Each structure stands twice: as structure tokens, then as C-alpha cells.
Image (cartoon, rainbow, N blue to C red; front, top):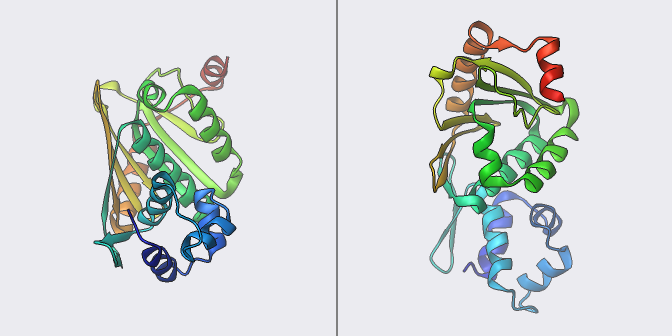
Length: 224
């Protein structure tokens, strides 16, 4: 588990106040202050939530007292919890910076299986609430009817033979690779702005030249 000194140090590196950490973890500023001052012995899961919030921003914890900020780094997430953590990060970045988000090779059934309907509804609502702050594009197979993000994203259909159970996600400075298997899911996230932007360029070329727009009738059929 991380130490109180590491929590203070990580906040300092990121220039976060206790309030900033509170917003990103759901833990009250008062509780964070008590933890940092040694007035409260936090539970292990509380420290894990705090640790995860820092790691999303590139903080690496070393031993019992070390921390460092990596400019280019890789994170790996696994299982339902890991996939939800990844989607939380997508939302956090979108909320903070907005911009264009692209997802290639979306297979909605995979996301429903691993995230669950209720969690997906919550995520869709918060993404929709970002409004015009984001521009979201999703490439999925020709004829796909489960457009689970249609309330905040534009879809285009791609030839099914171009798609697999591996998805690629570009958002902010991040490029993510999502691998769905029968009994496992994993996400590898690369924090590298140049790679993320290069993928967007390639995605948009395919979007404009291969992707098939849904007609009004097709959109109506999907929305029923």
C-alpha cells in the first residue's frame, strides 16, 4: 500500500489540492486531510482508490517512499474492474480536455458483457452530459444494431472482415488497445500524444473513405 508521504508527494508532483484528489476519488477532502496528517488509518481499498487515481495520471510508486512521474508510460488493466477503470479514465480525460475521441472495431456485445448494462447506462449518461465538448466517432461492423453509445457518438459501419475482437481507442494524449477474449479482457494504455494523434489521422482516413454512414431509416431502426 502507498504511504501518506507518497500521497502528499504525488499531489505535489501533479499540483493537485486535496480537493482535486477528492474530485477524482469520491473521498471527501476532510478524509484525505485526516489520512495525510495521520489522524485516520485508512482501509486498504481506500488507499487503492487513491493509488489508482494517481496512476491514471502517470504517477509510479516505488517501494515505501518513492514516487516519480513518467512522461511516456504504459498501463495495463484487466477484468471487469480494470475495464471500468479504463472507461473512467476515458471520461476523466474527456471531461478535463474535451476534443475528438475515436474507437475502431467496436463490438458492443463485448462491452455489454464485461461492463454490465447498468454501468454502461451510467457511463453513457455522463458522456452525453459533456455535450459538444467532445466529438466521438465509433467504427463498428456493417449492420450492427446495438449502438450503445448512440446518444453521444456518431457511428459508421465498416466491412465485417476488417474487424476482430481487438479494439483501438484514442482519447486525449492516450492510445489504448483493448483485447476481448471468451473469459478475459485486458487493456493496454499508452500515454504518448504523437501516437494518439497519428492513429486519429489514420482513423479519419478510413472513416471518410471506407466507413458507411447510416441513413435516416437505418438510424431510426437502430433507435427503436
